[in-house]
Image 1 (tube, helix red, strand yellow):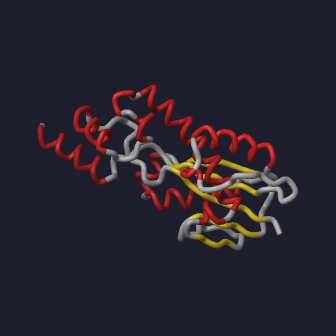
Image 2 (image 1 turned 90 degrees about the horizontal axis):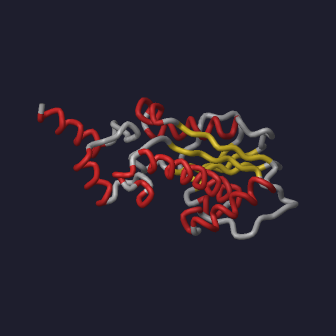
Image 3 (image 1 turned 45 degrees about the vertical axis):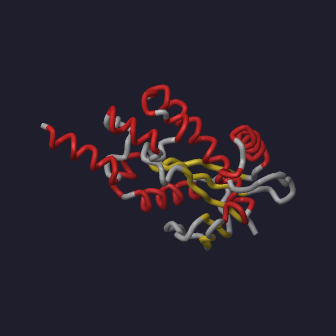
Length: 192
């Protein structure tokens, strides 16, 4: 049986899109230390991502764009990204395990597993490669918009991020449909 794991990162962020990883591990070439990417240091994630990419039978990363997040909503954009990530694998799996409680519209038997990124190695691997790719993109976005401190909070609405938003207003990569950002934009409009 060829099993694929799928996970996303960035769904709860207030910036940019959602990164989705899909991974089919090689049972004959195991990888030690796979677990939820959030429980690993950035350095360890990067090491594991390289190992995953070299040892996995197949892997892919898809991005549900900012426009898709804003037009479809974050859940539907994530499910679309998951569908595309699975479909872009160069091997079709017999079973797909997805972290969470929703299954994308795919023609392969699938199972959603809450906290699957800690329970199913292929989901852990998908989580790790997606997070490493997103972290690289966030570093680039931080270079473009350093005043928001994306390098510290990765776009999540921390106190520091909210303070920067209040001071500078949203930038082009902020999700304008998100409540706190939409409210800031509405307040700015009221001033004019």
